[in-house]
Amino acid sequence: MTEMPSLSKIAQIAVQTADLGRAKAFYADALGLKLMFEAGGMAFFDAGGVRLLVGPMFKDTPPSGDVVIYFDAGDWGATERALESRGVKLEPALVVQRAEGREHALRRFKDPDGNQLAIIGWRAVHRANIAI
Image (cartoon, rainbow, N blue to C red):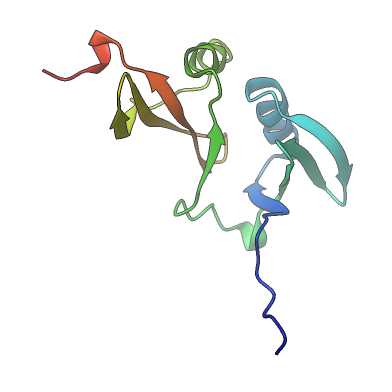
Protein backbone atom coordinates (compact mmCIF):
# COMPACT_ATOMS: atom_id res chain seq x y z
CA MET A 1 0.00 0.00 0.00
CA THR A 2 1.35 3.44 -0.96
CA GLU A 3 1.46 6.02 1.78
CA MET A 4 -0.51 9.18 1.05
CA PRO A 5 1.80 12.23 0.93
CA SER A 6 0.97 15.00 3.39
CA LEU A 7 1.70 18.67 3.60
CA SER A 8 4.03 19.47 6.46
CA LYS A 9 5.72 22.78 5.74
CA ILE A 10 4.66 26.18 4.46
CA ALA A 11 6.98 27.28 1.68
CA GLN A 12 5.55 30.73 0.94
CA ILE A 13 2.83 33.12 2.05
CA ALA A 14 1.67 35.99 -0.17
CA VAL A 15 0.23 39.37 0.77
CA GLN A 16 -1.08 41.98 -1.61
CA THR A 17 0.01 45.59 -1.88
CA ALA A 18 -1.09 48.64 -3.83
CA ASP A 19 2.37 50.24 -3.40
CA LEU A 20 5.36 47.88 -3.52
CA GLY A 21 7.87 50.54 -2.43
CA ARG A 22 5.85 51.41 0.66
CA ALA A 23 5.27 47.73 1.49
CA LYS A 24 8.97 46.88 1.03
CA ALA A 25 9.93 49.64 3.43
CA PHE A 26 7.39 48.42 6.01
CA TYR A 27 8.40 44.76 5.90
CA ALA A 28 12.15 45.52 5.80
CA ASP A 29 12.43 48.60 8.01
CA ALA A 30 9.50 48.34 10.44
CA LEU A 31 9.41 44.55 10.80
CA GLY A 32 13.08 43.86 10.15
CA LEU A 33 12.56 41.08 7.59
CA LYS A 34 15.42 40.34 5.20
CA LEU A 35 14.68 41.09 1.55
CA MET A 36 15.74 37.97 -0.38
CA PHE A 37 15.12 39.19 -3.94
CA GLU A 38 12.72 41.04 -6.23
CA ALA A 39 11.21 39.66 -9.43
CA GLY A 40 8.22 40.44 -11.62
CA GLY A 41 7.04 43.40 -9.53
CA MET A 42 7.14 41.35 -6.34
CA ALA A 43 9.43 41.38 -3.30
CA PHE A 44 10.37 38.20 -1.43
CA PHE A 45 11.34 38.29 2.25
CA ASP A 46 12.75 35.64 4.58
CA ALA A 47 10.40 35.20 7.54
CA GLY A 48 12.32 32.65 9.58
CA GLY A 49 12.59 30.12 6.77
CA VAL A 50 9.16 30.83 5.28
CA ARG A 51 9.23 33.02 2.18
CA LEU A 52 6.88 36.02 2.30
CA LEU A 53 5.87 37.29 -1.14
CA VAL A 54 4.67 40.89 -1.26
CA GLY A 55 3.09 41.58 -4.61
CA PRO A 56 0.49 43.54 -6.52
CA MET A 57 -3.19 43.38 -5.66
CA PHE A 58 -5.32 41.09 -7.75
CA LYS A 59 -7.83 42.98 -9.91
CA ASP A 60 -7.57 46.05 -7.65
CA THR A 61 -9.32 44.24 -4.80
CA PRO A 62 -8.36 45.19 -1.26
CA PRO A 63 -7.09 42.52 1.15
CA SER A 64 -9.96 40.44 2.51
CA GLY A 65 -8.83 40.85 6.12
CA ASP A 66 -9.79 37.29 7.02
CA VAL A 67 -6.21 35.94 7.13
CA VAL A 68 -3.72 36.81 9.86
CA ILE A 69 0.03 36.17 9.64
CA TYR A 70 1.47 35.53 13.10
CA PHE A 71 5.14 36.29 13.72
CA ASP A 72 6.94 34.64 16.63
CA ALA A 73 7.64 37.47 19.07
CA GLY A 74 10.76 35.84 20.51
CA ASP A 75 11.76 38.26 23.29
CA TRP A 76 8.29 39.73 23.83
CA GLY A 77 9.25 43.04 25.46
CA ALA A 78 12.10 43.76 23.06
CA THR A 79 9.89 42.97 20.06
CA GLU A 80 7.07 45.22 21.27
CA ARG A 81 9.46 48.10 21.93
CA ALA A 82 11.20 47.70 18.57
CA LEU A 83 7.97 47.60 16.57
CA GLU A 84 6.46 50.56 18.41
CA SER A 85 9.67 52.59 18.00
CA ARG A 86 9.43 51.97 14.24
CA GLY A 87 5.87 53.30 14.11
CA VAL A 88 3.96 50.00 14.13
CA LYS A 89 0.58 50.51 15.84
CA LEU A 90 -0.01 47.40 17.93
CA GLU A 91 -3.48 46.61 19.25
CA PRO A 92 -3.80 45.73 22.96
CA ALA A 93 -2.53 42.28 23.89
CA LEU A 94 -4.94 39.35 23.92
CA VAL A 95 -3.98 36.56 26.32
CA VAL A 96 -4.88 33.16 24.88
CA GLN A 97 -3.36 30.88 27.54
CA ARG A 98 -1.89 31.14 31.03
CA ALA A 99 0.69 28.93 32.71
CA GLU A 100 2.80 29.21 35.86
CA GLY A 101 4.46 32.64 35.72
CA ARG A 102 3.82 33.24 32.03
CA GLU A 103 1.11 33.77 29.47
CA HIS A 104 0.75 33.16 25.76
CA ALA A 105 -0.36 36.40 24.15
CA LEU A 106 -0.78 38.06 20.79
CA ARG A 107 -0.92 41.62 19.53
CA ARG A 108 -2.39 42.39 16.12
CA PHE A 109 -1.36 45.15 13.76
CA LYS A 110 -1.77 45.96 10.07
CA ASP A 111 0.61 46.64 7.23
CA PRO A 112 0.12 49.80 5.10
CA ASP A 113 -2.36 47.94 2.86
CA GLY A 114 -4.51 46.68 5.73
CA ASN A 115 -3.20 43.09 5.76
CA GLN A 116 -3.65 41.61 9.24
CA LEU A 117 -0.44 40.70 11.07
CA ALA A 118 0.35 39.85 14.69
CA ILE A 119 3.11 38.94 17.06
CA ILE A 120 2.51 35.89 19.23
CA GLY A 121 4.47 34.23 21.99
CA TRP A 122 5.02 33.59 25.65
CA ARG A 123 5.70 36.49 27.98
CA ALA A 124 6.38 36.72 31.68
CA VAL A 125 3.37 37.55 33.82
CA HIS A 126 3.78 40.82 35.66
CA ARG A 127 1.29 42.24 38.12
CA ALA A 128 0.27 44.84 35.51
CA ASN A 129 -0.74 42.01 33.14
CA ILE A 130 -3.10 40.35 35.62
CA ALA A 131 -6.72 41.53 35.68
CA ILE A 132 -8.06 41.77 39.25
